[in-house]
Length: 374
Length: 174
Image (cartoon, rainbow over all chains, first blue to last red; front, side, top):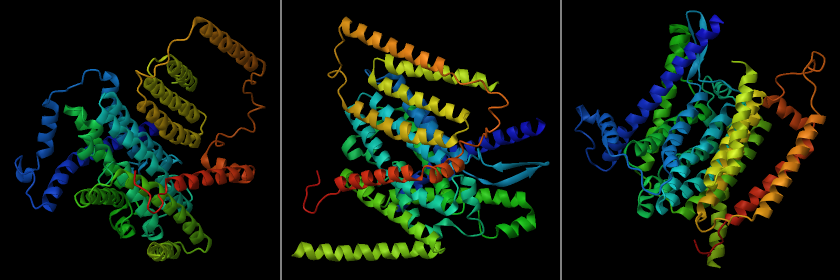
């Protein structure tokens, strides 16, 4: 009983730390997003609050809280409030199964640096991601505004379309690791055997789907301001709007952590065994946690980089890419992975799959061009 | 907290939200209560130690099918498409049919009530039956043919969806 209490306390503290890290990263993502945008557009960006504008997120938060909290007439009041709450809830729940590190032993008690180690870990992530759309859908409908409703409907159809390709790209990972548990998936990738080497195509599919699921540019059609004013959050103000925006940044960070877990070895880093031998396993584990967070932050940067580089898709292009582009591609990836496991050369099969795909596309292009001329 | 207390609480919650699906005036509220009902049923799966079913139930029903329901209902103009209230004869007939079904169900369950767990009939019981590894083994050995047939069916449906979505050369974008 005593041991159970210790483990329970440790888990509670750990979950609190993950919560704090996630919120802190999300808050500072807003600052870095503006700084990166400014850099790419040759501007200075926020520089008034504190040195280099480092206190800008605090100023933003104060502004959000002080603004008038407006609920439009004829809106559905409870659902209007529930929308941002649901968005925030689903954004924060995913991190429960991400393994942030290996085991830590403090005063004789050993525990994992992971919220819960269930043997359906990746399905949990998938389930929570598929629920993420409810916040947008409910908020958009409750606003009683045509533009909000259109944004919500776009979000729903987009999320459902890209979930299919995302699930298929995860299946290839499951074939390689033979387990649904995120911890087991990371353990098969230790000592540099990262899944990205065997699954380059799967990673590209997963990355594109992650962009679509987070509603980030070039897939931010639900809040497309040229067509829909503000999309699903047109009617929102004050901290309710803040929650929607905040949930997006949390989703970015968590999806970065999930991508690092699935494709980039999780908490693995070069020289893990050497540091474990020199400084003890606890130090190596904490550096591993830092490595995972670093990888996740790198993905957050990629999200921002793409946002300020690529223009937005048209809606039919978005649906076309999801249904006729990514789903057949992820089926192809599953077949290639199966072939690689069969001949026991997964890396060769992964690279060979991309080569075959490119050759196929070029041949197809050449053939269809001839048809167009004739 | 006793596990039976959790079961009673969860069952009460399930029944309450299932009733609210029927009684809610607004169809959107109905759908949201239905989503909540699915969550409660997933909670029951967790109590039965069937984590895989829990996750799949949430992904498929709460995450995909209910989103489509909500999607369609949101497209309707609810004020225009409200069904007019039924006559009292229809209401009476409905209650009689539903009441008869309830009585039949209760009678059926009462007659075939499962024996209480004893030492003899729990000897072959393993708590790991619902885990994904065991479920996979059963599906890929005992039920291999039906499973593969279902997967072919889904594959055909998926290819059909992609084919319908594909735009021919020269066709308009909208």
